[in-house]
Length: 273
Image (cartoon, rainbow, N blue to C red; front, side):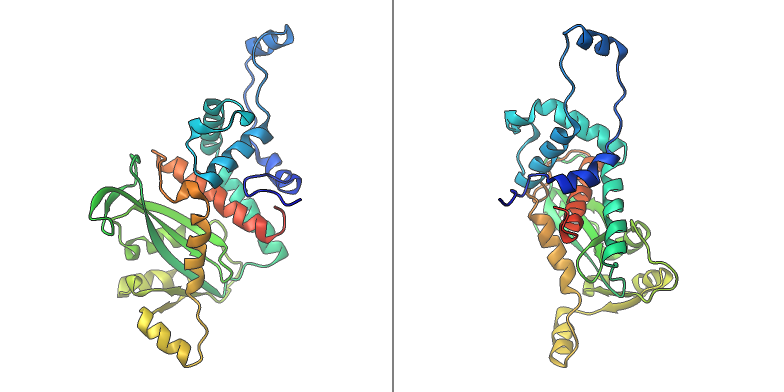
């Protein structure tokens, strides 16, 4: 029987479990539990499953089904794991396994940004030019390999232009190629400019920046479409309903959810989900 999108398989859990941050035990609470008092601590797997459920369905934390336990406890653990860097470590582990088993397709990479509403966010927000300039909008800038696997994620306010974030995106790659691997970087016209191309070359990329019209003509002449894969990656992220509209107040929490989504995409490609 096929698992539902938010269910965690044994194979996936085997990848996750070794990275779960160890909780600090309170001796007084341990003593109370031995005497039959106090609440039994939540299982790490149940907590992780609850977080994946929220990410997949987009529900509020406090609306978690009772089968997952206390919603406030789940959210508290989510914040603790976020602070411990757990979600980034999981993403990094997934990329390492993907590189070993499939090989990251470094040759043709793509970069792009996508805006979303962020009505309750308190960090990395700004006027959204596509939403009549309303104050709270956020943008995720991503870098993907030729198969759409996410290599870098940077979050800014919606008013930050793509071209201003090229260096941040390339600098914050979770994994980098070994040696002098040939790298081509595809981008749309929003990344045009001498400074932008200089940054790409600084990180050993050959820039390929084309407006949609020029790209269409090139395809008609027989050149393969390359940049589309980053738009597919944005679509994959949008299937995690918690990312469609950002309700996380802090940048760290929103990035943690993005990192978890990136990890799930990778492990799904590896057949571990």
